[in-house]
Image (tube, rainbow, N blue to C red; front, side, top):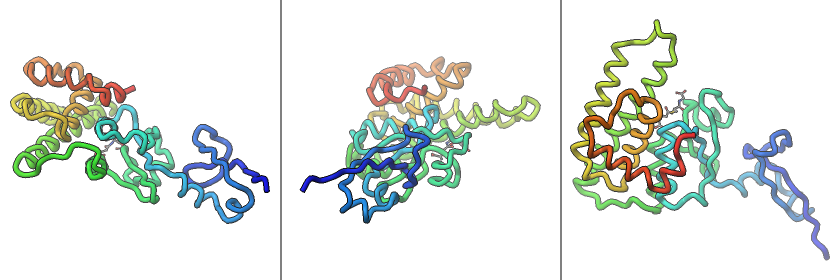
Length: 244
Ligand SMILES: N[C@@H](CCC(=O)N[C@@H](CS)C(=O)NCC(=O)O)C(=O)O
C-alpha cells in the first residue's frame, strides 16, 4: 500500500508554531502510523541535536566554538545565536543566569558555563587529550589565568557602558592591572601554548582585547605572545569564529 507522509513543522521547544520559519525544522513522517502517536514534544526529542546557544561577540562562547571545531564536532552540534542582553526565552529557559554559552544536550538537559561545556567536549574524545601529570595541572592553571583575562576584559566593556559618572576608576584600574600582569605571565610561558584548552582560552582572551580594547596595545611589551597569537589566529577554528 502506498505510504502517505505529512510534513511537520517543529519548533525546537517542541511547540508547533509557524510564525518564525527560520527557527523550524521540517520533518516528513509516515501518516497515520507514526503521527498518530507522536506529540510535538516527542518529535522534538527525536530530532534534537546538541545545540549551543552563543553570542558572536562573547569570548566565552568563542572559546567553546573554537574547541568544537578543533574537536571536529561541527556536524554533531548545532549553533544558535542568543544575545544575552535581549533575554531570549530559549536562553533563560536553558540557563537561569541568562548567560551564554549554554549547551542544550540531546536528552533535553543543559550544560553551562563555558568551562563545563569545554570539559564535556573534551570528554567526547574528539581531541585535546593530554598526558595527565604535572603538565596537565599547569595547562589548567594557564587556562584559568586566560579565563581571568576574559573576565576582566568583559568587565571593562560592561563598566564602559555605564554612565561615566557611575564608572569606577578603582575597578577599571584593577581590571587593567590584572590583564597586564596576566599577559606578562603568558608572554613568559608562550612556549607551553600549543593546542590545549590554555591556548584556546588565551586566543579567545587576546581576540577580545583586540576587538574591544585596542587602546591597551597589549602587543607592545609582549612580542612572543603577539607572534604566537597571530599564528594561532590563522587556524580555521579561529577564522570561522571571528567576532561578527
Ligand atoms: N563564567 C561564564 C561567563 C559567561 C558570560 O558572562 N557571558 C556573557 C557574554 S560575554 C553574558 O552572557 N552576559 C550576560 C549577563 O551577564 O547577563 C562562562 O564561562 O560561560
